Image (cartoon, rainbow, N blue to C red; front, top):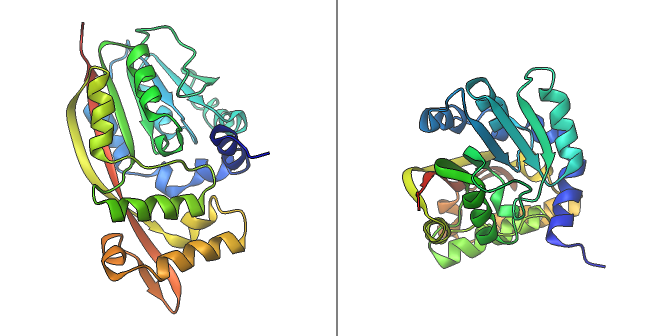
Length: 259
């Protein structure tokens, strides 16, 4: 029987739990200190990090807040992350939670974050409505993720590549699509940054691929795309081997409007 999108996430991330804790793209991004700069967190705050993965956002924000709640759909991933962080911080709580059905009361959190994860969510509109529900009026939400270009051909390419690489991947949305969901839930944009994320290809493709055959399909698709697409995504190759690959990323901070 075909696994559901969420069961695929649990399968992929459960077996790669340690890789995401140690992944340099996740652990060392310059967006992490920028997150603190934008949020200006306060010692009285309780914050929520959705789909925490390796816990990098929770780790970054914990010293500045009263309590950080780190959630993830994948229990094995969350347990592994808790092993890394529990001995360092005593103000991070861990809870298994679905981003689209958060087990928290309305108006609970001073800030909510979600970083490099929403492309795995089957219902992004439901996710954003849940963020708005649990966020206090005037609270802040920061979303960081890869996005699809507005150009339909380029958008189709990146979504196909990601799906070939990672069976748990659903879809990257464009900025226009995200803004539709945010505004529809009274989350008003206060700051944003267009970013480009360049990956070392071997590490990127191996992190979620099941086998060499799958890696071969991804490589072939990248090598034989048209020149316009290859240029846009910064695909570099040497001797038939992909070296680097670049994606669009968007970082946005919103504030929940008071009613």
